[in-house]
Length: 238
Image (tube, rainbow, N blue to C red; front, top):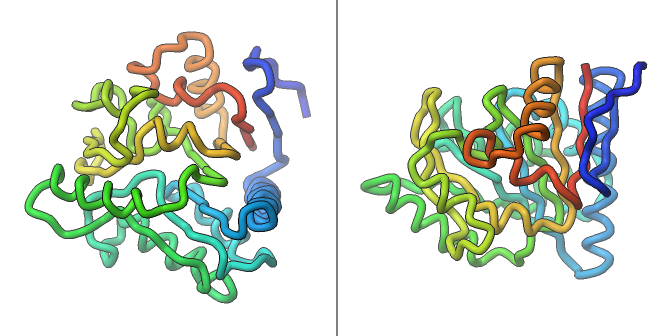
């Protein structure tokens, strides 16, 4: 496979996988290895994953990995503001594809709660995230064609606050251009503090978006730019 020259920042890792299946199994193995290391070092591990359609195969592969799942807490990088029973719920996705078999022993910390407003929901989620043993040990991010990651969308109200590296809020309300519009997202301060950070992307369109984000380095226009630095490891497949 041809070498891909992206002029990545120093110490940002890059892995090209042959196809989506290889990416899913390879990424799952790397995440499991990092979780085992965290458990060995600190007795517990916190894993944060992203939702959407792309992570399904990865979550399925990770659920089959052998580790002490009872010592793992799973949370979300972001969530759609919908009940877990809703088909767009990231929590529902994680329960269906990751938290099964031995992996069902993991503790799950979701972000959604019923509330009178999105802001109130974010405040409720903030209290839940505050109970996690931060920093996150392993973070798996995705990226949209518009350069968003988690629910940090270009042009979203509150994006400046959410991307503040010194921000004090852990979870904030977010608004997506796609349905459902109302979201909850972990802040940059929490996400970028993860000990192990991985970005999983697929296809030529995402590669072009990544290339543009690296070239422009404009966090407000392409929020993924905020994370394109060490200790990030990028995993791509055609």
